[in-house]
Amino acid sequence: MHREGQLLDKKSLRVLLQKTVDWGELVKDCIAFANAAGGCLVLGVEDDKDAPAADQRIPLALADTLKRKIGERTVNVSAQPTILTAANGGQYIEVLIPRATAVASTSDGRYYLRVADQSKPVTGDEVLRLTAERNSSSWETPTLLLIPRTESDAGKLDRLAISLRSSDRVKKSVKEKGNDELLDHYQLARGAYLTHLGVLCIGRREHRALLPTAPVIQVIKYDELGQKINKQVWDDHALNPMELVEEVWRSVPDFRESYELPSGLYRQQVPAFDEIVVRELLVNALVHRPYTQHGDIFLNLHPDRLDVVNPGLLPLGVTPRNVLHTTVRRDEHLARLFHDLKLMEREGSGFDKMFEVLLSQGRPAPQLQELHDGVQVTVFRRVIKPQIIDFIAKADLTYAMSQREKITLGLLAQHEALTARDLAHALELSSVELLNPWLKRLLDWGVVLVRGRTQATRYFVNEQLIRSLDFEDIPISNRMDQQCLVDLITKDVKQHPQAQIAAIHCRIGAEIPRSRIRRCLGQLVKEGRLRREGAKRGVRYV
Image (cartoon, rainbow, N blue to C red; front, side, top):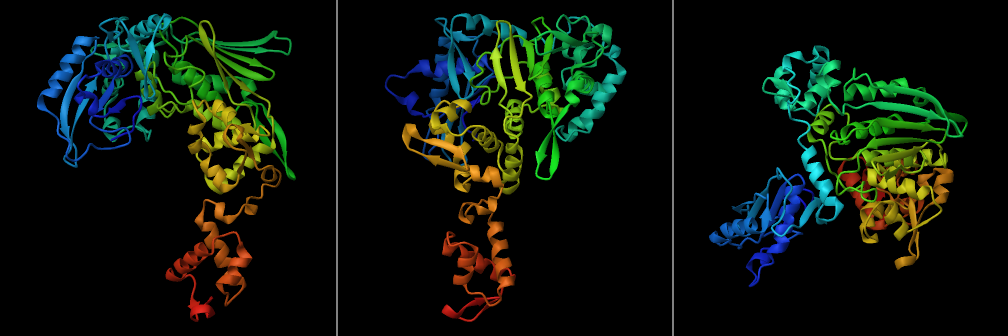
């Protein structure tokens, strides 16, 4: 069973077996799922468990009672409880809540929305936004323009089909479909007509122009005084969203610029704007915009930064403070198509990737802010600390770091030190207790050091490593890779035949536990890479 998240919530069976059942808490979760993407409520499994107790039994009437109570207390919620038996023989209730066709609420007019693993209340003006976004969800699939599927742009359809069939993200059964079947599979057509999504992606130019919110991109360059000095516009609707990403990247001269930074005896080229970052910005702007709202996409190029302004606010539940940890897909079918074409990560890791790339290049993290009628993302050209580039590259090569660890190391490398609270704030975490998976291995390896306790805890990068890039100085006991220890032992035995364990231990590192060296020697003897001679205290290795 999966962990709790956007589509799943688990609750103990005790909430239903109490003398006075708190139906409000169950109803809240059902409404939140219905207003988001739907979900599953599992009753009878504890939060930290994957299965119910083996002897747990569910009264048969409980499922009917649950369905009736939820129905009495909600509006536009369809709950379908089912009693299931787990592999260990224990029973539990699975309540499936499909996405509501209209805004769901309690019978007394309260609204909730599922955001990550929480069901949050929706109040005030947010209720109007929720209603508007619910209505916009039908933008992709209607066929109101009545454009026959036979009038699609044959060239665009063929290129799309070839790209899908060559993608390793598309199932074999889907690749075997004909072009006409692919239109139905990706909601590009319905019946005899192209859907709005179909017109956007494979329609002819004149048909795409009929869509009131077909994307228009403007790239405007400014000088140091804020004066416009150049402008490029894509407003003729000749290109679909996938082609726009490629065309904008190729056509803007500033994206070809780079810096020369010293790297030892050589110089390395660092792009002014990384291709991965620019493509992610373009994809996010095209896929996550509300296609029920008018407005152009602006790429404002300043001497020190790039501002990407997209019409429409962030999806309800997503804020600049939780964008790293929250995924809400506004245009589901368009996102699916971009994902299968390998233009984006559907689970919402695009912003995480931008953090990773920018911080690894010694640049500030991207800045996200909501405007009165749009969203602006800012990325900076300037490299704050050029030495960070080599440092993180060498650290990643040595330890094969995760994306979280590279983001954390990049943030810390740009500051002399960060308190636990400041680091949690920079990583958009709600509490310092959540820092452990981001920091633990970095601390174990000795790449990140810590001082102080409780609220005075401060984390900082080992500056000596940044200057020397000599990760061999880190104690082997803190290193991730067991292979390093194996290599050191075999190299030492080659150089010192008839070596005893005490001498090996002294030469390769007294800080390494002797028991670990003994285990490693035993494994090498077992594999036939070393031979043991002698007995007891006279044992030597060849």
